[in-house]
Image 1 (spheres, one colour):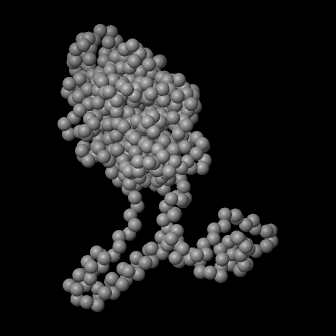
Image 2 (tube, rainbow, N blue to C red):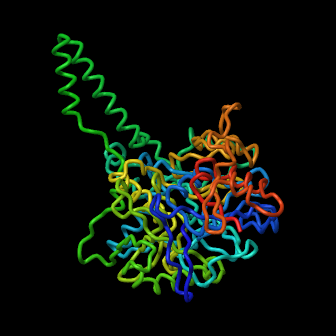
Length: 531
């Protein structure tokens, strides 16, 4: 998020400022010209407002993403939602209440099997879908050029989102195995036919065949044996029987005795099988002789940090390889940020970090994340294409949700996982909605709305106002333009003073647009650079 002066092509020294010491300094570019869309491939349909951040505090960036902004390196952009070809809605997952789906667990189990047994699942070589990125920009944290400022024409805004599309699965083979023994006790004649019989013209219907015709060898269920039932139905029936027995005992005795009986039955009754938590899949200890060893290291993006400095070359090489292999791009210009300490924050501090995935002593993936006062914001992921069979996009997202929960224990306000933008008009970008529960940001009033309430609206129109209150307005809107802070000739002043000193044509319309987009709070904290 923060941007410092790059020197010698080695990288920029971050300016992630501690609150009150070094304020955010931005240049606003407006959003008149359209550019190529990486989702629908429109040449000029992608419209957004943009700012170049010379420095950025974590609190300011938190407030900006809560108003629909997003960073790509030092460039911060906000789609013009009612005009752009593919509206991009900010999406956040309620990390504390997240429940992994069957397809999520499948990815987690695949990683566990690979580490513990060296098992490589079938179809491992199939490439998983990744997001399309706009050419010429990447939301990483490396700098390859020495310019401190760039012209608007040199910057191509980009969604720095990194997670892969998750395919819905009807069955999880891993979970199904847990029910096998119970099913065998009830019925040993379970037969599943994968072939659908083709009805014969003029002949009996398929249902009639099932009801009357004897099954052919190897096809269909054996009707001479009792029909098998699902394990879930069997468990429910057993629980109901126990409940009825407890209620009968309670009615026989006095109210006191019945109360004791209920307490006793509750204590003695076995607890139902609870689904495994996300942490049960992520934080697992493996034996020393496991075929593989995976270690996830959190490294602050700073050349003053020895881990970041020592792994920079390997990480940068991996990034270049990923860009060229997956996105057919060359490494692009990006910014550097550093960690920011806070008294009530997490031990690692706030700011930009790399989560490095070390497998058997080498980096196979790097997740770029921002740790902010209220959330972990996912910026980008790049990985070794040779390990695409591990579904690293999905796996890293689940790790980051688990990491958000860890940080919440030390920083109670930090409880959300921001996944970038949700793009409903692009079907392959709808996978983020599968990380539930999640919310979408209303593009007009900037309030969070459960995604379940938003999806029906998006089916009718790609641009929607989610707030059901028709009278509601943006509570953070600008009320006093004169209070906007301006940096002019190395002097900080309110816009009301700058306006009197300014020579030349008025820039009030541009400042008004900037202030309305960042909101009153940020406009009074950040410094708007004016030449």
